[in-house]
Structures are given as C-alpha cells and as structure tokens.
Length: 341
Image (cartoon, rainbow, N blue to C red; front, side, top):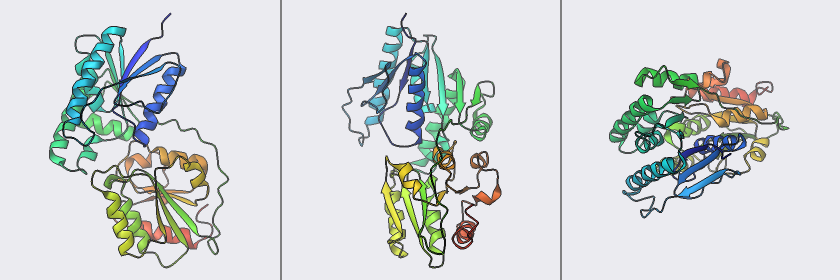
C-alpha cells in the first residue's frame, strides 16, 4: 500500500523559527508514515525516508524584482501537476502566502489546505519597506487563507484571537502550542561580585524583534561586569544590524556587545550565559524563550499578550517600547545575588 502523499511548499532555507517548525512538521509526518513532497527552489536541510524535494528551475535571482512573481507562477503550476499526478487530498502550508499557492493550485480538485500560522505577517509588513502595498497584499492573503483553508492552526491563543477578530474564521481556527523538548543544562547562577554576567538574545535581527531596546537599556546601566550576545542574522531588508552596530560604536559598547550571527551551537553558548532577554514587539509562540526555559536559563521578556501566555509572572516581563523598566530589572539582576533565582 502506497503512503498517503501530502504536498507542501517553501521557497528556500532560512534560519529561524519559521523553518524550525516547518521541518519539524515534515519529520513528524514522515515518522507517522506519510509521504511528504515539498516544492522549493533548493533542497531544504530536512531529511526523512519519505520526504522528497521537487526543485523549481528558477531563472531570476533572489534579489530580482521578478523572483517572487516567477516563484509564485512556477510553484502554483507544479503544485497543481503533483496534486493531479499523485491524487493528493491534503496540502500543508505555513503562512497565508503559501496557503494562497495551494488554494489556486488545487481549485476544483477537492484538496484540503491545512495552514499553519507562526506570527502576524500584517504586523511584520508595517515594519518593512514599501509598508502600504505589503499591508494590502497580506490583508488580502489572510482573507483568502481564512476563507478557503480547511483549517488554520496558530501557535498561540493570542494569535488565534487576532486573526479571528480581523478576518473571521472562528469555526476553522485552532491553537496548537509549540512542543519544545529540551533537557536542563548545568547553568550556573552568576556570582555578581566576580563573574562577567553574560546576557543573550536569540533571534533574527529586525525591528520587530526590538534588539535596539536592549542596547538602550544596557547603555543606561552603571559600569558593571556584563556582556551582551546577539545570536542571529539580519533578515530585515533594512540593514538593521548596521543600525545596531552603529549604536554600539557610538555609545562605547563595542567591548561588551558581540554579534555572533546564526549559530548551530546555541545550547553550548546558552550554557555559558546567565540571562536570556526577548524584547520582541510581536510573536506567535517563541521557540527561543521556550527552549531557554527548558534549559533552566533565567528569562526576561517583553510584556505582550503572546509572552504572557508563557510567562504569567509580571516580574519576568518588561515594557517593550521604552528601556527604563528593562534597565531597572537588569540593575537588580546585576546587583542582587538572589534575583536570578
């Protein structure tokens, strides 16, 4: 008996929470006996006995204005061909953009589109270049995705409520929290009188992730033994890392602030840290925070609804639009021996 085929699509690998969830879904389906065929412009770093890539022969470069129109047209055409060839009844898509590929490709074929939502693309669009046309496009995609998806799965109740309020769909949206499996690490609480206190933020660099707020808060601290590690790469399209580095240089923080880029040895780095900061302005359900909690690392995060689902204690939260409250909590962390605990 042939395995049931499920089709999916994603353009190419990017490090971050989006692909982490996507690959986890592919592996879970493979382990459950399904055959997963995904369409992409390059082979994704996810393997399984029944995971099969179909690579699109793109002519445009990723930086070209024609790249996304070409990808969209080729992906829709290939999805439709594979749907017919394998008599596929289920498409698995992450985000309303990819759901629209499925909806167009399967029109009239009786396919059910299952759409996973990790965050708010409309919120993200407002933080990027050409914000107004981006906002319009994502609003249309969300309306189409809600209307024509068989089911929409969010990673938090907050995200579910936002989508339902904006686009309807109460009868087909569900919340499925992230399943993060970690083991506690031997993390030592700092000796604040002697140790250099290592503070880390694990996230892509862009304005929505709000790393500049942390730098502003740290800049206000009195001279003490701390080091701040930014783990992640810039995906803003606005050269946000350069803005952060300019702030660091202008405020004499270059010896204390380290930009590590995207790393594969994150647990080893966090094991040497004493505090995780997550200053984000918006999230679905953040992998980095859940993993750090699983490792046993003390955490402070922005006071937004999505984070309050994970960290209900207000002492672990800070206002993400002005650095004063974070500065006060960092001062306590650096001065009071029991505060980390």
